Amino acid sequence: MKQLKCLLIATIFFLGANPIFAQSKTAHVEVNEIMSKMPAILEAQKQLEKLRAEYGVVYKTMGEEFQTKIKKYEGEVKVVSEKMNVERQKEVQDMEKRIQEYGQTADNELQTKREELMKPIQEKIIAAIQKVGKAKGYQYVLNSEGLLLADGPNLTADVKKELGF
Image (cartoon, rainbow, N blue to C red; front, side):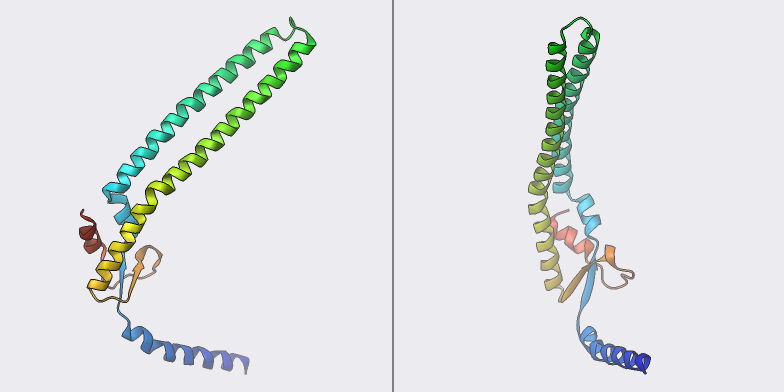
């Protein structure tokens, strides 16, 4: 009885929803393909890589200074006073903390910069998809990457043309 009830509800839903889908015009677009070839995205990636490299140089320099200091202090541990060793240990711990904080700050700033660069580009892509979809009379435009079957109209080429590449 319970199975029959579920089957009946599913049948009503399917038959009731079928006219809705039959009346809707749907197309798809390959957003990842557009993003991978869009000049503005490629330029943003170059800027991010340059910034990442700059942070990397500073981080590497800090690490090298840290290692140099540790080696120096390890070599002098027996010839300096206990008080000096305690101060040096604290200094090394503080230096290690600063390096970790710098790494976290750099990661956060890179993420912020990425969002800052990508947001207007993504908005431009969305606007182009909407413009092309409306111009061609589609009510729904789906991203084909999440679809199991994308056999309908593909607007990717039209969106690229709208974006100028």
